[in-house]
Length: 240
Image 1 (cartoon, one colour):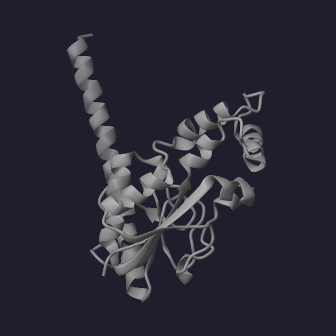
Image 2: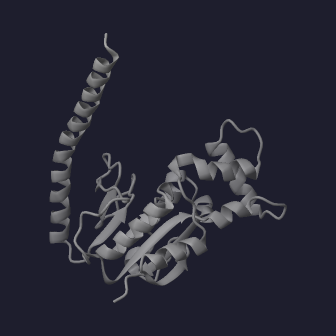
């Protein structure tokens, strides 16, 4: 059989599969538009959750790149958001921004700023690179030692020693992580995206009632203490 003919057939099949996927996506996008429009029409206070995973917050428009059966709608946070400017009062994203690149993270933050109302607040929770790197060294805290054991036991079944090097490497490579932030980088990213009043918060705490006790990462990993240890939280406001 002629190789060129085979390749053309192969290209045609790839194109057919691609077109089929696009066609299947259309009903989902129509459904998403309906859900979004209904949410915006029925909520005076509008809250957007990005990267909801298995946790859809009550009263929020919950979104995820893989919505599944958890009550959220599709959103690829590295692409333009399907919302007009200045429509949300608060935006929350937990353990999601580390799953996209630095450039995509900047774009996501700029889109969050765009869709927030003036004075609206974003809350970002993500692993703290500084905490993870502090595990490497002689002066490790008791909580740090506990974290190394926990990660090794729960997520590194192939590792038979408690060594921070494995845990640090795992943080960069596992769960689809692409870019880890420390506090300075998060402040830089939020500032470049145009946020003001940028501040670090403790998990579960906020001066904004809508953003208190919204973290759920500890429930998913079944250890609130370890989740709080590895997580940093930042808030920022769109200038009025």
